[in-house]
Image (cartoon, rainbow, N blue to C red; front, side):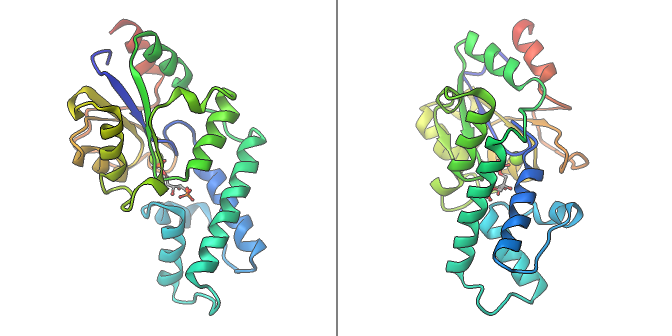
Length: 229
Ligand code: XBP
Ligand code: MG
Protein backbone atom coordinates (compact mmCIF):
# COMPACT_ATOMS: atom_id res chain seq x y z
CA UNK A 1 0.00 0.00 0.00
CA UNK A 2 2.88 2.35 0.77
CA UNK A 3 4.04 2.23 -2.86
CA UNK A 4 1.18 4.44 -4.08
CA UNK A 5 1.99 8.15 -4.42
CA UNK A 6 -1.65 9.13 -3.84
CA UNK A 7 -4.84 7.71 -2.33
CA UNK A 8 -8.01 8.96 -4.05
CA UNK A 9 -11.05 8.58 -1.80
CA UNK A 10 -14.68 8.26 -2.70
CA UNK A 11 -16.89 9.92 -0.05
CA UNK A 12 -20.37 8.46 0.47
CA UNK A 13 -20.14 4.94 1.84
CA UNK A 14 -16.33 5.02 1.86
CA UNK A 15 -15.23 7.81 4.21
CA UNK A 16 -18.52 7.59 6.13
CA UNK A 17 -21.88 5.81 5.98
CA UNK A 18 -23.62 8.98 4.83
CA UNK A 19 -26.35 7.55 2.60
CA UNK A 20 -28.88 7.24 5.43
CA UNK A 21 -28.35 10.94 6.13
CA UNK A 22 -28.79 11.70 2.41
CA UNK A 23 -31.99 9.62 2.41
CA UNK A 24 -33.33 11.50 5.46
CA UNK A 25 -32.47 14.84 3.81
CA UNK A 26 -34.22 13.78 0.60
CA UNK A 27 -37.36 12.69 2.47
CA UNK A 28 -37.51 15.85 4.59
CA UNK A 29 -37.09 17.90 1.39
CA UNK A 30 -39.87 16.01 -0.38
CA UNK A 31 -42.17 16.76 2.58
CA UNK A 32 -41.10 20.41 2.66
CA UNK A 33 -41.93 20.78 -1.05
CA UNK A 34 -45.19 18.85 -0.64
CA UNK A 35 -44.17 16.21 -3.19
CA UNK A 36 -45.81 13.24 -1.47
CA UNK A 37 -42.69 11.13 -2.13
CA UNK A 38 -40.96 8.98 0.50
CA UNK A 39 -37.88 6.86 -0.23
CA UNK A 40 -37.71 3.79 2.03
CA UNK A 41 -34.30 2.20 2.64
CA UNK A 42 -35.33 -0.65 0.32
CA UNK A 43 -36.31 1.73 -2.51
CA UNK A 44 -33.22 3.89 -1.92
CA UNK A 45 -30.99 0.83 -2.36
CA UNK A 46 -32.40 0.54 -5.89
CA UNK A 47 -32.23 4.28 -6.61
CA UNK A 48 -28.60 4.46 -5.46
CA UNK A 49 -27.64 2.73 -8.69
CA UNK A 50 -28.25 6.17 -10.23
CA UNK A 51 -25.48 8.48 -9.06
CA UNK A 52 -26.14 12.14 -8.37
CA UNK A 53 -29.05 13.38 -6.26
CA UNK A 54 -30.68 15.42 -9.05
CA UNK A 55 -30.29 12.56 -11.53
CA UNK A 56 -31.74 10.18 -8.94
CA UNK A 57 -34.84 12.34 -8.48
CA UNK A 58 -35.32 12.66 -12.25
CA UNK A 59 -34.98 8.89 -12.58
CA UNK A 60 -37.55 8.30 -9.83
CA UNK A 61 -40.03 10.80 -11.32
CA UNK A 62 -39.75 9.15 -14.76
CA UNK A 63 -39.83 5.62 -13.33
CA UNK A 64 -43.00 6.10 -11.35
CA UNK A 65 -44.63 8.01 -14.17
CA UNK A 66 -46.51 10.32 -11.85
CA UNK A 67 -44.36 13.45 -11.51
CA UNK A 68 -46.45 16.40 -10.30
CA UNK A 69 -47.22 18.75 -13.18
CA UNK A 70 -45.20 21.59 -11.66
CA UNK A 71 -42.09 19.44 -11.16
CA UNK A 72 -39.92 21.33 -13.66
CA UNK A 73 -36.13 20.98 -13.87
CA UNK A 74 -35.88 24.31 -12.09
CA UNK A 75 -38.10 23.12 -9.23
CA UNK A 76 -36.05 19.89 -8.92
CA UNK A 77 -32.85 21.95 -8.82
CA UNK A 78 -34.42 24.14 -6.11
CA UNK A 79 -35.42 21.02 -4.19
CA UNK A 80 -31.89 19.63 -4.49
CA UNK A 81 -30.41 22.88 -3.16
CA UNK A 82 -32.75 22.61 -0.16
CA UNK A 83 -31.78 18.96 0.31
CA UNK A 84 -28.07 19.86 0.27
CA UNK A 85 -28.69 22.56 2.88
CA UNK A 86 -30.63 20.10 5.07
CA UNK A 87 -27.95 17.42 4.63
CA UNK A 88 -25.31 19.93 5.73
CA UNK A 89 -27.33 20.74 8.88
CA UNK A 90 -27.69 17.06 9.77
CA UNK A 91 -23.98 16.37 9.21
CA UNK A 92 -22.93 19.50 11.16
CA UNK A 93 -25.09 18.22 14.05
CA UNK A 94 -22.72 15.23 14.29
CA UNK A 95 -25.07 12.59 12.93
CA UNK A 96 -22.34 10.73 11.00
CA UNK A 97 -18.82 9.66 12.03
CA UNK A 98 -16.01 8.55 9.73
CA UNK A 99 -15.91 4.81 9.17
CA UNK A 100 -13.49 2.61 11.17
CA UNK A 101 -9.85 2.97 10.15
CA UNK A 102 -10.29 6.15 8.08
CA UNK A 103 -8.52 8.53 10.46
CA UNK A 104 -5.70 6.04 11.11
CA UNK A 105 -5.26 5.54 7.36
CA UNK A 106 -5.19 9.29 6.69
CA UNK A 107 -2.56 9.74 9.41
CA UNK A 108 -0.46 6.81 8.15
CA UNK A 109 -0.61 8.05 4.55
CA UNK A 110 0.42 11.57 5.57
CA UNK A 111 3.28 10.17 7.67
CA UNK A 112 4.55 8.49 4.49
CA UNK A 113 4.06 11.64 2.38
CA UNK A 114 1.32 10.02 0.32
CA UNK A 115 -1.00 12.60 -1.22
CA UNK A 116 -4.73 12.49 -0.39
CA UNK A 117 -7.43 13.35 -2.92
CA UNK A 118 -11.20 13.01 -3.26
CA UNK A 119 -13.24 11.97 -6.31
CA UNK A 120 -16.95 11.95 -5.52
CA UNK A 121 -20.37 12.25 -7.13
CA UNK A 122 -21.81 14.20 -4.25
CA UNK A 123 -21.87 17.99 -4.03
CA UNK A 124 -18.82 19.94 -2.86
CA UNK A 125 -20.81 21.51 -0.02
CA UNK A 126 -21.57 18.00 1.25
CA UNK A 127 -17.87 17.04 1.21
CA UNK A 128 -16.90 20.17 3.13
CA UNK A 129 -19.68 19.60 5.68
CA UNK A 130 -18.58 16.02 6.35
CA UNK A 131 -14.85 16.80 6.56
CA UNK A 132 -15.41 19.78 8.89
CA UNK A 133 -17.80 17.86 11.14
CA UNK A 134 -15.47 14.85 11.45
CA UNK A 135 -11.95 16.31 11.15
CA UNK A 136 -12.45 19.90 12.26
CA UNK A 137 -11.76 23.07 10.31
CA UNK A 138 -8.55 21.51 8.93
CA UNK A 139 -10.50 18.63 7.41
CA UNK A 140 -11.14 19.95 3.89
CA UNK A 141 -7.49 21.07 3.58
CA UNK A 142 -6.18 17.52 4.07
CA UNK A 143 -7.34 16.56 0.57
CA UNK A 144 -5.99 18.12 -2.61
CA UNK A 145 -7.61 17.95 -5.09
CA UNK A 146 -11.24 17.52 -4.15
CA UNK A 147 -13.20 16.72 -7.32
CA UNK A 148 -16.98 16.80 -6.70
CA UNK A 149 -20.10 16.06 -8.72
CA UNK A 150 -20.52 19.61 -10.02
CA UNK A 151 -16.94 19.64 -11.40
CA UNK A 152 -17.70 17.19 -14.20
CA UNK A 153 -20.38 16.64 -16.83
CA UNK A 154 -20.62 12.87 -16.53
CA UNK A 155 -20.93 11.37 -13.04
CA UNK A 156 -19.79 7.88 -12.04
CA UNK A 157 -19.64 5.24 -13.54
CA UNK A 158 -18.12 7.62 -16.10
CA UNK A 159 -14.40 8.13 -15.29
CA UNK A 160 -14.58 11.95 -15.38
CA UNK A 161 -14.03 12.68 -11.68
CA UNK A 162 -11.06 10.34 -11.56
CA UNK A 163 -9.53 11.66 -14.79
CA UNK A 164 -9.82 15.20 -13.40
CA UNK A 165 -8.25 14.09 -10.10
CA UNK A 166 -5.31 12.50 -11.96
CA UNK A 167 -4.85 15.65 -14.02
CA UNK A 168 -4.84 17.88 -10.94
CA UNK A 169 -2.52 15.49 -9.08
CA UNK A 170 -0.16 15.38 -12.06
CA UNK A 171 0.32 11.66 -11.46
CA UNK A 172 -0.08 8.57 -13.68
CA UNK A 173 -2.99 6.27 -12.81
CA UNK A 174 -0.65 3.42 -11.87
CA UNK A 175 0.85 5.46 -9.00
CA UNK A 176 -2.56 6.05 -7.43
CA UNK A 177 -5.05 3.90 -5.53
CA UNK A 178 -8.79 4.63 -5.61
CA UNK A 179 -10.76 3.68 -2.47
CA UNK A 180 -14.41 3.03 -3.23
CA UNK A 181 -17.58 1.26 -2.00
CA UNK A 182 -19.77 0.83 -5.11
CA UNK A 183 -19.71 -0.83 -8.51
CA UNK A 184 -20.26 2.55 -10.14
CA UNK A 185 -17.15 3.78 -8.35
CA UNK A 186 -15.17 0.68 -9.29
CA UNK A 187 -16.10 1.13 -12.96
CA UNK A 188 -15.34 4.86 -12.90
CA UNK A 189 -11.85 4.50 -11.37
CA UNK A 190 -10.98 1.37 -13.37
CA UNK A 191 -11.97 3.15 -16.60
CA UNK A 192 -9.44 5.83 -15.65
CA UNK A 193 -6.81 3.09 -15.28
CA UNK A 194 -6.61 3.39 -11.49
CA UNK A 195 -6.42 0.27 -9.27
CA UNK A 196 -9.38 0.17 -6.87
CA UNK A 197 -9.61 -0.98 -3.28
CA UNK A 198 -13.19 -1.68 -2.21
CA UNK A 199 -14.35 -1.18 1.35
CA UNK A 200 -17.73 -2.86 1.76
CA UNK A 201 -20.47 -0.39 2.80
CA UNK A 202 -23.98 -0.81 4.14
CA UNK A 203 -25.85 -0.26 0.87
CA UNK A 204 -23.45 -2.16 -1.41
CA UNK A 205 -22.34 -4.92 0.97
CA UNK A 206 -23.53 -7.77 -1.23
CA UNK A 207 -22.33 -6.42 -4.57
CA UNK A 208 -19.69 -8.28 -6.58
CA UNK A 209 -16.56 -6.29 -7.34
CA UNK A 210 -14.79 -8.17 -10.13
CA UNK A 211 -11.54 -6.49 -11.09
CA UNK A 212 -10.94 -4.78 -7.74
CA UNK A 213 -7.29 -4.59 -6.60
CA UNK A 214 -8.46 -5.63 -3.12
CA UNK A 215 -11.67 -5.89 -1.08
CA UNK A 216 -11.80 -5.21 2.68
CA UNK A 217 -14.60 -4.98 5.25
CA UNK A 218 -13.32 -1.60 6.40
CA UNK A 219 -10.11 0.44 6.29
CA UNK A 220 -8.81 -0.62 9.71
CA UNK A 221 -6.87 -3.44 8.10
CA UNK A 222 -5.44 -1.07 5.47
CA UNK A 223 -4.21 1.40 8.07
CA UNK A 224 -2.29 -1.39 9.83
CA UNK A 225 -0.77 -2.51 6.52
CA UNK A 226 0.25 1.06 5.73
CA UNK A 227 2.28 1.12 8.91
CA UNK A 228 3.94 -2.26 8.42
CA UNK A 229 3.32 -3.68 4.93
C1 XBP B 1 -22.72 9.10 -3.78
C2 XBP B 1 -23.77 9.66 -4.66
C3 XBP B 1 -24.38 10.98 -4.31
C4 XBP B 1 -25.10 10.90 -2.96
C5 XBP B 1 -26.09 12.04 -2.78
O1 XBP B 1 -21.53 9.78 -4.15
O2 XBP B 1 -24.09 9.05 -5.67
O3 XBP B 1 -25.32 11.27 -5.33
O4 XBP B 1 -25.88 9.69 -2.94
O5 XBP B 1 -25.39 13.27 -2.89
P1 XBP B 1 -20.06 9.03 -3.96
P2 XBP B 1 -25.94 14.43 -3.88
O6 XBP B 1 -20.28 7.60 -3.49
O7 XBP B 1 -19.41 9.12 -5.33
O8 XBP B 1 -19.34 9.85 -2.92
O9 XBP B 1 -27.41 14.61 -3.56
O10 XBP B 1 -25.10 15.64 -3.56
O11 XBP B 1 -25.70 13.90 -5.26
MG1 MG C 1 -19.59 5.85 -2.65
